[in-house]
Amino acid sequence: MSWILLFIAGLLEIAWAAGLKSSEGFTRLGPSVFTIVTALGSFVLLAMAMKQLPLGTAYAVWTGIGAVGAFVFGIVYMGEAVTAARILSAVLIVAGIIGLKLSSGH
Image (cartoon, rainbow, N blue to C red; front, side, top):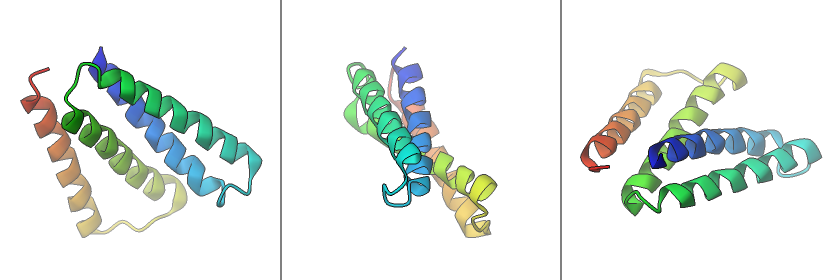
C-alpha cells in the first residue's frame, strides 16, 4: 500500500509543479489554489508512505516521479525542447527509481 501512496504522491507532485508554473508566481488565484492543494496532498501521501518505506528510497522515488513527470508534461503541454541529452537524463532518473524500488526490500 505504501508504494501506491508514494506513486500517487508523485503524481500530485507533477500536478503542483505544473500548477506552480501556471500560477505565474502566485499571481493567478485558480492555479495558485490548485498548486497549494496538490502540494499539500503530495506531502501528506509522502509522509504516509514513509511510515513503511526507507526515507532515502521514498524521497528519491517521489522526486524522481515528479521530475520525470514534469519533464514529460513540459514537453507535451508546454512545448519545451526535446533533445537527446534531456531524454537520456530522464531515462537515467527512471533507471534510478527502478533500482531503488527493486533494492528497497519492500
